[in-house]
Structures are given as C-alpha cells and as structure tokens.
Amino acid sequence: MGLAQSAYLRYESGETAPSYSVIKNMALTLGTSIEYLTGKLNDKSPNELIISCSDNRLSYIIETYHSLSDTDKEHLFEYTKKLSRKNK
Image 1 (cartoon, rainbow, N blue to C red):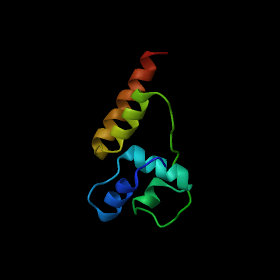
Image 2: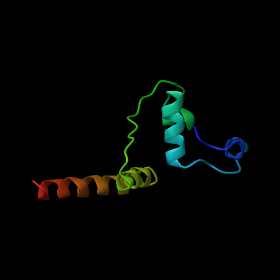
Image 3: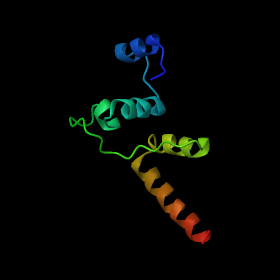
C-alpha cells in the first residue's frame, strides 16, 4: 500500500491513527469497506462507494465531509443542491 512498516506499527499500537485517505486506500487494496476497517461493521464486503479521483479539491471535500457533524453534513448537502441549481 506504499506505507512504511513503521507507519503500520504506529497504527497497530494506537500511537497514531491513519488519515481518511490512508484508510480509503487500505479498503480499496484489501477489497473491503472503510466501515469494516474502522470497526463499525462486521461484514467484510465493500458497502460504500469509495471515490478515487485525481482532483485534489474533490478529495479534500470528501475527506473533510467525513469529519463533519450530521447537522453540518446536511447543511453542506443543501448548499450543494442550491449551487447545482444556479449552474443550470
């Protein structure tokens, strides 16, 4: 996965936590879901669409979205809908 062995050791020991992009890469490589890797689901099968893109702006938005509260996620969703209507 392109990570140094020391990074794996820090993740496994709990010294540090991997970023969303590292977890996403692990899930893609291992053919499982982010939820399974983070202990939210017991099912190993992928159940989330993992978006891989070369646009750093979109990657930043996706990574930031996961750290938002449910209320802020809803606000962002409504704002995005308004923006898309303006551009039509």
